[in-house]
Length: 115
Length: 114
Image (cartoon, rainbow over all chains, first blue to last red; front, side):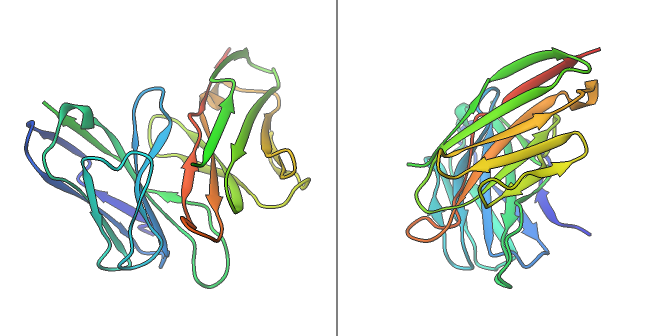
């Protein structure tokens, strides 16, 4: 079972470069999330989506954009990377329209370094 | 703005000790509270709590929710070195604006010495 898959797993960017992180889930979940994790900061919500075609801002959205064109995919974009965006990024998904709650399932993370 | 506060931020104990981790929250339209364990990679799920006063148990771990006082506790009895990890608490919103939003606390770092 694949669950939640993030690509890439590691990336080094130069300041000003752009990139897209891809999150894919095969559990037919409605909700998807992007978090960043920095030392001592827990998981901070960047953007989230409660369904195909919808997105909403989390706690730290600046410098990031997202899209959810297909239900199974949630893309996180960095238009002009900055060193402050060096972090570990986690994608998660949860909730099914079948009427039952699920816990959030996480991808394995993407370690991004901006130099 | 949703708020999830965990305490203590870090805890050092010896094997065999019992620990209690706390999570308090302020969220509009509460749906559920989740506990996760994280060991250097993706968080792994421990418990989901939606109703007050019903204890969830898994081996040496247990958790309970108090929706009136807006907090949850995670207990670990007879701790082992393998329990060393960051424990994360999160809350999910139900209806209204921002439904489905999943907000985490800053985590409690637990270190268990032999």
